[in-house]
Image (cartoon, rainbow, N blue to C red; front, top):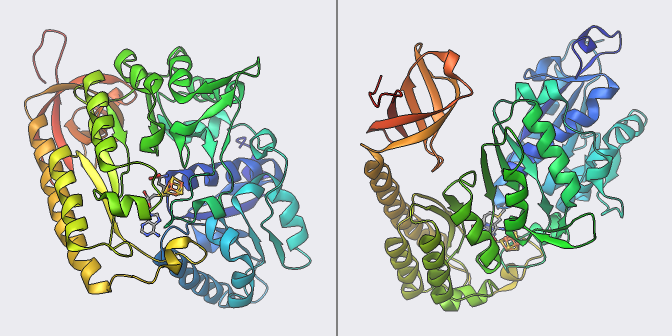
Length: 461
Ligand code: SAM
Ligand code: SF4
């Protein structure tokens, strides 16, 4: 947004609350960009907003319920406003909007507009319509929303910092039997290579040093180049690494089936491609993997990890696990715990299975009792915590490049990220923000590391 916009007579404020994954964070930023030419500036104070948007997540049941309770809170807030205060529009975006559009309209009469992830570029038009009546837009349009969304503005990007998300792929055709993504985000689509490179160059020009490529199934990326030839994620990484200013590349979330040779080679060859991989496996049991429609076995997953570690021995691994999928026996669960122990994760997320209406998992008649899910989750999380602490402990004494990102919590401190995505706190001046510096790790806390900068003569400061 331009500097003078807040002074425009029709300047308006938008408050966006984002739930769920990084892709929603990216989408919220794109909505802000789409609204900027129409006089909207972002605010972090709901009280001064003309427009409140909830960008929602539908992955687990609780996520949707949180949205309904937040909508109740916003409605009360709007009702309690001074008489004559400016009108506040309330909108629901994201995957809950896509999946439950009509239900939201029925359950939450205060909502003025509901729109799915494929409609963000039409937001200004939808807002105009919402002035005169409630609007719902959850179609999957033919046009490419990315081609219609304005490019991120430099000033906006700078305010977002040294790291940025860049969506390269959306949707999913894999239809895992527990997951709503193919229904809420639609079929798998990759952005053309030129569009991705142009956005990355814009981010680099605006001072971004690290980009995280996003996709529900990011390593299934197959965008077309100028000759109409399909380009893999690995090949895209080689191109992005050429862009001046982009010093770090990450990507998330990947599917084991799409971990191809070109991507593994990119990890071997490109110092810009960070040695951190989020590769969800969900379960260590072949029976459950099959019931989940994951289309690979546990042995195949172990083999993929071996190939990745051969190419990049220091690769930090992360994953997602679901416990209590229908039919999961004690033996199936034990295979998951064994997998976690054998692989050794730097970090991992684990969830209790939650039934998602419309997915095959919801129809299965061998659902697991809640208390069993809870017990299994506790066991798995304890193992994951043990492993991530062991991984962090192994970093103590090691010197590694850290991107200094922001001032630390205490004065005289800065905070950055290691190549392995760990937060690192360092006693140093904030003038160093923006640099990638060698840092010796000297300690570990629960979720972060402590480090000190190593100078050119090898001494730590
Ligand atoms: N595309 C990624 C993949 O293939 O693994 C995952 C995307 S999903 C947005 C993120 C994670 O949410 C999944 O890896 C899974 O562990 C979890 N998840 C998805 N649906 C779930 C459900 N119904 N119950 C519990 N966890 C779920
Ligand atoms: Fe969902 Fe990922 Fe499976 Fe696609 S691959 S259906 S996004 S869990």
